Length: 569
Image 1: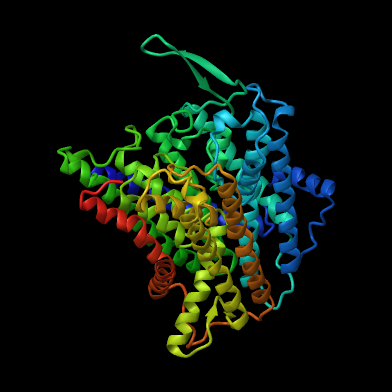
Image 2 (image 1 turned 30 degrees about the horizontal axis):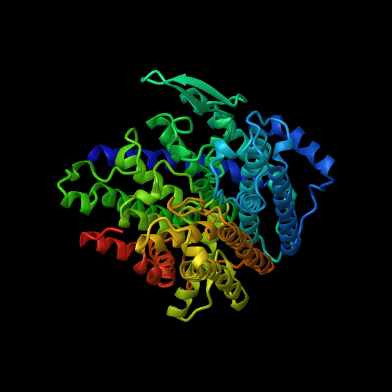
């Protein structure tokens, strides 16, 4: 750990913090239907899309209609992407002549990108045509992110309204999230990536002569455009197999910081936008404070573990001063690698600039635990916000039990109905993660895909289902996931983590919207104070610790103590 490393980390967080308010205010205006500086350019296209699709802009939906529209749209996207992948050989823009993707892998990939997970059981440069990358994967990078934003905005409206039977129009929110937020930001970031050296071309490859005089073929494609929305939409799926560790995806240290900034910007600003939409900006800042405390602790944990070096190599006489550099890019070093690893897992991004499976036991534990906390730090675009609101509901319930008062959040009484839905939502993650992990760790067809025996092998399995159910997409690379069992069950975990979670959340939105909004009284527990932030952090940590600590004790924690004892696997 160095002072320069910490200054880099601090500078990045300060830049993100500086953009939270202006971007958050802008998004609040967009989803409130107010005029913005992009309205003269985007509004004609927006209204044209409504006319073509037959959408009545002024017609709102109740929570059930909103949810069904989202599910139908997501199902259509899944089927369309599956068809593109299966028929890839017959579609245009396939200069490499790649065959159609196998059925199991096509299902896994379609489920992955529609759920904003971007888990990849394939190498993009040797599997996907340019058409599949652009029309299939990149399109879903926009639409899955826009879907998450729409759901979060609907939940914000539910808390802002009083005795309302509607929470907005899914098609309008989806369109505005795409046209006013994601697309403009992606264009700007893509141009910046091109300026930094990322390719943007339809050529299949380029020939290069190495220093030894040999000829090497370098895979190319529309990298910069996919990289931009991959980060802004917290998707994470890379054009290349090694993701942002590849110099074409992430050419320089500056592009690395831009990657991390792009990941955080929209998700963090949405927390502020929530406060603006519900009429209490302090609530947005309270959510951001909780996120900041846990995320900075995560960065510090990874940085500390990786800077300390590998105990086994140190015992063999290797100088630990450079830290553990296995699986890391020398041009990024410890600080940028630790920052990227914590941010990409605190978000539901999943992109990597280093190989997480090569991290030390504790260095790999932290990213896994950040996902298991519910992907709310600040989580995926939209999904992190509605996940944070679920934890806030649980927190005010705990506070209500302690003081003997009816729980209340932002002027809405939290009753048995909301608590049942909130608990149903938070149980989805451990059910999918621990259930599938248990079967995979005991069945021969699950263990056969493990690359490393012992505790690290269990960590590979546990991380895979943690990543899938958390809609993250990162991986411990030792697991061979392209099998029928893992393609099927990881795909199922992704679908459960996205849709089985969000349906109860939308039911909460419908219930809350129908309630009268009351003014705070002397007995109301304020949810914007440091006391509430501490309670919220405690609830998030306790839920994560109680549910997953036993499994973590058998995986990365056991591996850590074995490593200290000099044992290898």
